[in-house]
Amino acid sequence: MERVAIVGPGGAGKSTFARALGDRTGLPVIHLDRHFWHPGWVESERDDWRRKQAELLEGDRWIVDGNYGGTFAERFARADTVIVVSRPPIKCVASALWRSTRNYGKSIQADGCPERFDLSFLRWIWNYPRDSRPRLDAAIEAHPHLDVIELTTRREMQRFLDDLPPQLTSG
Image (cartoon, rainbow, N blue to C red; front, side, top):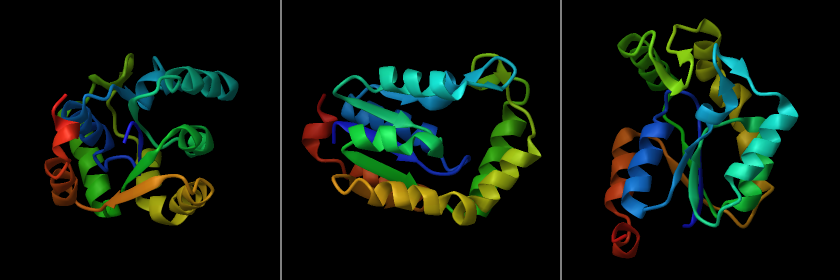
């Protein structure tokens, strides 16, 4: 486990899990939201985004968190492990709402992108199993070299971290 892609819907806990996994393994953590979004929640241009991801993933050791289904192929080709965080939609929507409420107006996800209530984002989270998960599953299937781990609850996420082999947690 040297190059780990963490994927799943918004509000699933990917970023928090990525930070904890980075602390446990010593792998550097890359939060894609920080690189994709420009101030005012402006999206990166498609070609620029692909180039930026390629630069971010040049290293031999990393954890990258973020969904961005249009670039699964690039990430999965370089990754050795994919961790799918697939908590139930109601839990993900509740977490996203809690994050927005707790951090309203603060730039948490990316510089210059203050937390806000975004109905289209909440709809995307709710519909993720139907609309986005098939694309994720197809991308994983296209990369049979991957070790795939699916975590469906916060308890499973914590248990995964707690159960890491000693060689991963010792530096």
